[in-house]
Length: 95
Length: 490
Image (cartoon, each protein chain N blue to C red):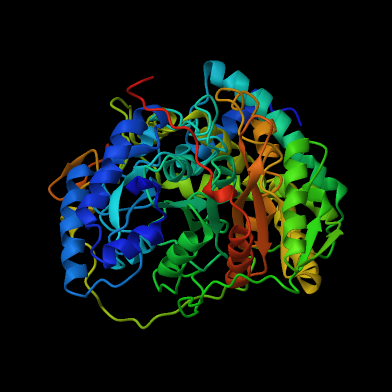
């Protein structure tokens, strides 16, 4: 499958990444090649085979709803680049 | 014998017997790192002061009879995608450079409880995405057997550190072969446990349904001991299997063991030396009383595309958490909130990580989801069935770990598809959630190590480790050491 400029733009929006310049041309060529290779799966008849997310049966895990102390607020924002008054600081998102 | 040449258990025994102090062992390991790591680049972070302080604490625990584990006081290192509270944990990425976790991963905590002295964090491919340990922000790791070659990846630093005697054992993580392939390239022993056996709590996620933490060491005995220390149920990982921590003693006995060789693992791309040594290893095990039989697993050719579709899909989802806000790299300049995401992610991630996120976003996008992602999950089911059929007939499967020995540095990254194809022997094991053990089984004509992969049925680590142990009791490949270079001389 040929990966077009439109597709790269769309993938970029989905992944929140700007793919520009040399990286863009290289990505188009490489992704086309990799996706072509993945098409080998079409050889295989998988009708009626259930998709398997986990190799072993995994069931939802419940626990008692007990109130326990969580992480300190100061610790949670420790690694944030921008913070103010004990909160994460971000550019204005709502007018 | 130089202290650092000892196995973890040999050292642990001498520490318990008070023949060697924990401080002596720690200083010896730090000295070796000082001498050799400027050449091999196994470490991203070395915690000298913390390690020396910790050595005193652990010594006190041993002297008071509180720390009785055979691993107590043994200096070790962990891959830089394992969170350790307050210690830089970068995943070898600009995105997490300087990130200090606020909690410690369960596997590391278990080892701390057993008395580990943590030397530092080992180098790796960025976000564990790679087969060569060349995509690290902190530079490529070099193979101690030949500094012009890669150590494998993504746990290349963890493997090279054991091989270069810069740690007595290490932890790595394995999503598609990232413990086993570097263990093979570096001539050491490595175990990828059954999915769900070791808690992933505190392991920075790449592909959550495939990721598993495991040990790397000088021999099976060391690896088995570390495995026993890190395995066990953890309520903080909802995929962690409810089972008691493993307890067993290794046995040098493979009489009657049924070993199968799936021929599809030894394809056209397999180097003749690799093939020859794998068959010689099979002969050795046969001579020890195991039965060997060849069979076909035709599904294997679909394992690589299925693996990369699933792994990249999960990566694109997992790595969406890096937004430049909560933690990690934040761009200096941006127009608004959306632009902050775009700029931080575009500048923070390296080429291979971006490539996998893009593949993942593509295969999950509407219009392509059924053709790629759902199809890959169906192939995963077929792969699991193929292994179930194999384990109805055999106790252990025997294969190469990789088609070749370690490639030269700088030769792999230019052709990503070719690099993906080199994972042919390892990825299917992750799709099926099975345990895989790698033990050294010889050298190629250039003197580079070759690793034998033994694949076990789910939760059959004991059988697998016994097989590897018996092999090492009757061979000496695991005792061979490289001729070391010191960075200072070079």
